[in-house]
Image (cartoon, rainbow, N blue to C red):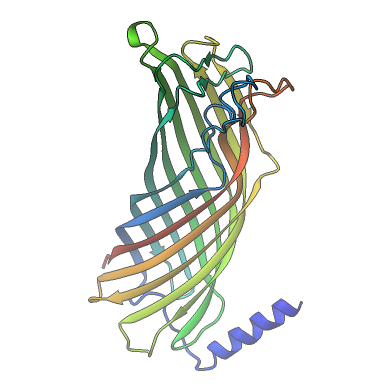
Length: 337
């Protein structure tokens, strides 16, 4: 109730100057915007490859040597953006928007001859230990790739009026798709024929979909200004369908599969700011920044336990991980006559 009173007071203050302001400067009708943004992607969990202790023979490893840290799934990628909408009148508008980005992370690691290397078994058994003392290190290459598509359908309704400002209520539906691929290869030059000692692949296909609601504040310096400033936020609930598959080429020949149907869903939220300049009555430049947060979505993950730990555990499995994205960008908007 206290929050509702503050919002009501805020709305009265901005609408004190009366009569209708417009979110955009153009008339009612169809508009389309094309642009690009830099999307910064930050995953809460990383992907482990190997175990934390390469050597499990205590007399040889004293003190015990720790293995590789997890591969952190943080990257930045250019993203094309699209916005297509229709302004019905001064109070109502509908918009479809979307963006796409492709991320990748690569690492090159070395397990020294003094420690050896342990492969990951995809189904929890029959992993390979490349013993130390072969006279050469084990070279490891790690590659992670992800394609991400976001779309949203949004209805906007004006809830206050003013010459220079207005508040808009937002209702919409978002869809988030991600396709991840993780590959790792380990090579020890002393093995017969210099063959690959371990070749590992995992994939994750994920669908998130759900409704959201929010508010947006639109401001102009004065009634005739060519500039408009927008700031808004939204929150919603994603439902999830995810599919995971892991395969080790030389060990555990059959693929290991898991699904994640999180019908209880996960919370997501976002915020954005935009500065719009009207070149003329048909063309507009929109410069902005968008932040998005997903509380718990499916993620590839490998156990960090050592082979000497015999407690039942699946080395490759799905866990839930937080996702943050930051996206500054620019769009060119055209309003059809």
